Picture 1 (cartoon, rainbow, N blue to C red):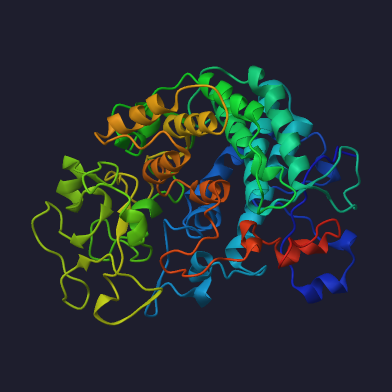
Picture 2: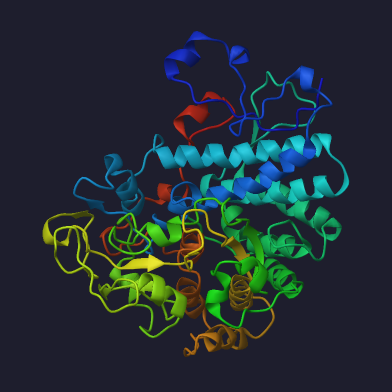
Length: 503
């Protein structure tokens, strides 16, 4: 019988069906379509599974799954209901207002998506050898990081256990210790130079830095803290950042253009897209744009005014003129506010009712009337690939060097050794801005400006103790239970999992 050091994911069945059959009779199915039974022992296609595990990173490109849990739950992004659009039984608004429950679809789907990728990685580790196994161990650590961060508890199956046994579960601290040890064990065996959509020593160093920076949160007995940032952990962050061989791109937007993976020396790890064969990265220019803009948008999500107001309006991270974009779309990349224009940038656009298409900072969670289609500041984080806007060539950036530098500055300010001020200047100089203060508040502010919509805002707010605070469109302090997402209701058929406190 094959080794069984893996996570078994199951089709989500109704409670009635599960009650009607024993656990051992349930059909086991991997959600990407790979099904393994005893007759397949020795026939596992490791190369195909490894490609599948890499393609699993495309889940982060979607507007739902990890991205919505990491951004809609914060001060950076909101999905208001617009008349009959974007309500979905309040599923988007629940994230922003911290009113989700264990049956929230995106909470469940993200859990299943991450554990499916862990399953694929384990099959490679069990059946592969050499470089393929090292890459799979890195990818498994990457997916485990996001489970630890969002859910705390982490299912695993010890080597040699029966498939009929429910997976065991690590506590948050146990899972953190395991993932750190895994990465430290494999970092030297990963390639030093590779395409940025593949595991590398740089990617492992970055992920280790992220783990050590968040270790105080992940190891805390209470998810609400207090968090004790040990100076030795902070020096580990600094050491791993210093081990990186990347540099900042000359232009901030080189990180987000088509062919960014071939252009920017800043990208450490990305989710690969090829023109004509891509994930859902088009969402990063469609999800907030209006139907009448080019490319046509979905008129959904917005950035709230208090977040936008942290920026200098001339900060090129939110206001960059790119000739090709002006010619084809009529807007600047970054945030859009005010009157919107058609291709060429001269013809004012209207909404579908003939009103001027003027995006306004004023926004409510449920919009109606004349502002139905215009309320809220919109964003374009990636430069549209006009060669194929539906399946573009832009890689989705998962790790980049500016984030690593800001992690280093934060680690210095939390007790590590080094000069945080020079890092703050380096980040600001690239976009011709005044440097934020070399303080924890300054780093927090700069991370908000540098990394908007890149999937790190929730992680940052938890670590800095601001996630539960009242804010625009959420005028109350949230219960501390929301620092972790609930374990999905269906997952609790595993008796080794317990619901996170408060749910």
